[in-house]
Image (cartoon, one colour):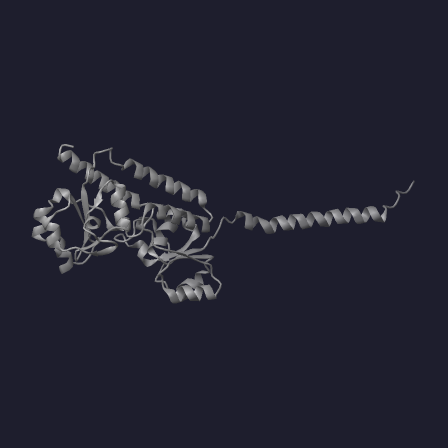
Length: 299
């Protein structure tokens, strides 16, 4: 019976090499699969109320490792209802490090010792500043969305915000020079160069405090407001806040006579404490108050 010729050694080596090469390719693909599947940071921790809300707006729950304790406060956070079972932290390094975050979001004034220690341990930290207008809000959403590797989600949120802003625009020539004042306990208010001012302007209104010469944040005498009342008055009080003498100032009889209740729209402070996509809702509420006032005046 004829014998089968022995395989050429070169052929045997070539076959073995091809087999080994195939194993290497399979192993390499297996190693790369988790990397390909990972879409940006997956253990995000936020230590600031403003970044808490951006994380909630941009990320699914499974990618959020923790938020600041302020995120769940319905009087301060516009997205408190979304927090659910997300762990909450006070902002101490000993709370954050065991979470093994792959990105920490913080504000420029967030617990500086914690931020310094996290950076010293090699934890990536993104610090974001305060925004004072809608252009700043758009830029910050894009900045954070890029860091989280969800740019498409960021653009979707911006588009939704811009649609709300567009629907709140006053019809040409209708708003005139309606003046609005935002007054917090103690007669604290916001003038030009503030997010509050940007919200008022987006609704086609004049910022009363800015018209009186206030730049940034400060105080206006109640006597001034009562003697030359704005068309609309927003009395900002915290939800569930404790009674105080400063708070009672907002119910001063002189203010009550000067600006009746129907000219006092409710615009929750949590919509503009931080600048975010939800800030457009403050504009929409002001626009509704504007339209009601104009209708009452026959305009």
